[in-house]
Image 1 (cartoon, helix red, strand yellow):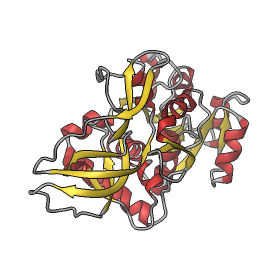
Image 2 (image 1 turned 180 degrees about the vertical axis):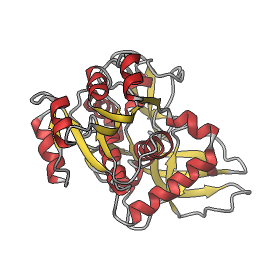
Image 3 (image 1 turned 60 degrees about the vertical axis):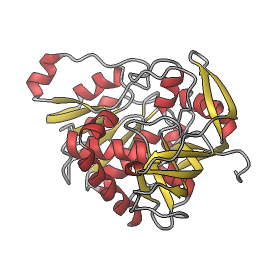
Length: 332
C-alpha cells in the first residue's frame, strides 16, 4: 500500500508519500480501501512532537477516514465485503493517511446513506468530540445559550451544529470578517468577530446581560478570560484545546463567585475508558446526520500526497470547516 509517512518530527515535520508494509488480517480485523481521510489539529501536533500521546517516527498519521471494505476476518459478523464505512480511530489509532488500512471491526461505523466519503471522513473526530463535550461534560440543556469560540474551524462548526440540534441558542466567535460572513451564510446570525468587536460586551448584549450558559473553547488564551467574564451563574466552560497557542489562566475567585464549572474534554481517552457510551453517542450523531441536522462542511479536498499543505492550512487558521485528503489517483 501507499501512505503518507511522517519520517521526522519538528517544525516543519518531514513527510513522504511512499510504499508501506500493510499488516496481516486478524480474526476480528477488517481491511478497508480508504477513499477519503479527515485532517485534524492533533495530526499537526503529533507531527511536531507536541501531542500528549507520544508518536515516534516513522509513522502514518490520520485519525479518521471513510472507504469500502475489501476483506474481513473470520470472526467478523457485523460487516461485509463491499460495505462503505467510516473509521473512527480517535482513541487509539494512527495510520489512516493511506490508500488502505487494517483495523479492528470495533472502529467501524456504517457510512450513512447519502453521505459522501469526504463528509464521512470528516465526521468522527470533531462531531464525536462535540457531542461528548456538550452532552456528557457540559450538560447542555434545551433553551440554554452556547458560545462556541473558533466557530469557523472544523471543531467549532461541528459544535455549533450539535448545539443547535440539541435545542440551544448558539453564538459564534471567529477571527475575521470573512469567516463571520461565511457562518452567517450557513444560517448562524449571531456571530462575533474577535479582531473587530468587544467580545464580552457583545455576548452580554446578546444575552440581555445574563451571560452565556456554556462556552465551548478550543482556542484558549485571552478568550478563556472573556468566557469567565461573560458567563452566566452556574455556567460551564468546556476546555477542548488551545489552538491559539496557549491555555487560559483560571482565576478561581471568579469561578467561586459565579459558581462556574471549568471542565476538561479529552475525547479519545474518554472513549477508550467508556466505549459503550461513545458507541451510543455515535449512533445519536448518525441519526442527526440522517435527519439533516448536522452536516460536515468541507473547505477543500486535496490529494493525500499534499497532506503537509493541508496541515499547514490548519495551522494558519485559513480553514473553514474541514480539510479532507484522498489517495492519489482518485478524483479530487
